[in-house]
Image 1 (cartoon, rainbow, N blue to C red):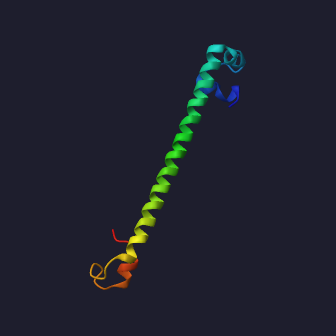
Image 2: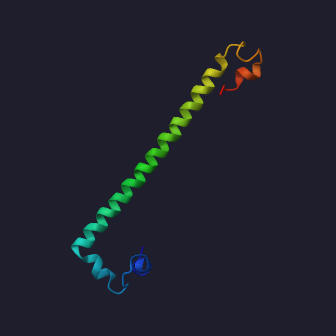
Image 3: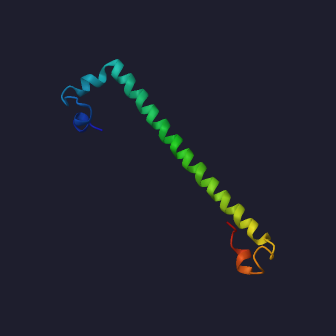
Length: 86
């Protein structure tokens, strides 16, 4: 984000934003904040992949069990044996 774009968001004067950002305390905060945001994005992506893999495993488990259903549970219907049970 440029200094001119961030002015309304944080209330900085675009002409003095570079000077303000160069102060050690402000610069340290910006570096820490950027690292925290990046870490949060990585955690969100990891969680999303974990959920996707969990869902994929549930689908594979259900599809592996359905052919092994006894005909008695599906009232002899082959269609019931080929669909995953709830």
